[in-house]
Length: 137
Image (cartoon, rainbow, N blue to C red):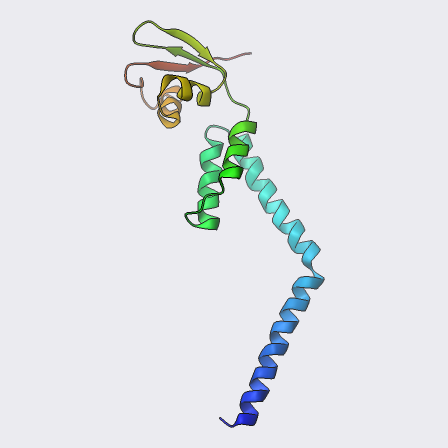
């Protein structure tokens, strides 16, 4: 290919890039709005299905960001998701109430996922301890 044809190709490529950048710049409001809607839908779904919404958001962020999980988003969802009060019946006769599954996990030393599995009826107990959701209605 001649030098002239190479230069013409370079100019065409630069113009194509400029056209794309101009389009993005001209329509950035629409792109921002669309992205906001997607984030809102994903967040709304996570909060509405709050059984394990923090894990849901963590999985979504892993898809979007690879192994770098955006812990700020996960922490926000964990802290702002309404939780259900939990009644703890320890195998040693301990009888406690917790405001949330997370609090029960922190204080009893069991993992949140195991407590969630017990509360949802997947397993009968967590190392002999039993958790149940307290219905406030």
